[in-house]
Amino acid sequence: MITRQRKWMFYLLAIFVLGAGFTEYLSIFLGLLLGTVLSFYNLWLMQRKINQFGQALAENTSSPKGIGSFSRLATAGLAVIIALRFEEYFHLTAVIIGLMTTYVVIMIDFALFRSRD
Image (tube, rainbow, N blue to C red; front, side):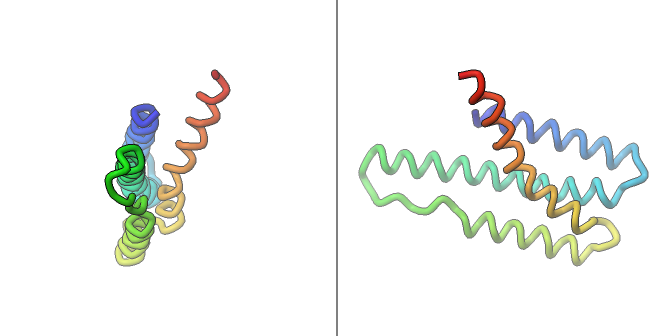
């Protein structure tokens, strides 16, 4: 599941790079690219924290720490600050849509592979 989700995120990133390179909507695709890159980082962070959380529960050695919600929220804030600071390069709405791509990928992955069971 983790590998599939990362693969889909890489495909989306490749599409956004091609869109930025070959269309006239540069600021929109750069915004999508910025948001999706930080969303991909959030996906990696969430998967790593969930693995650590599950391992701590399975080993029962220490109390499990959180799953990094504050870190993911701070990353989203950073994306918005970058988009507002460099408004001529990044479209703010596209950055926000890009930040949501992880959750869309997770939902689509769940729907596709849950129906096969």
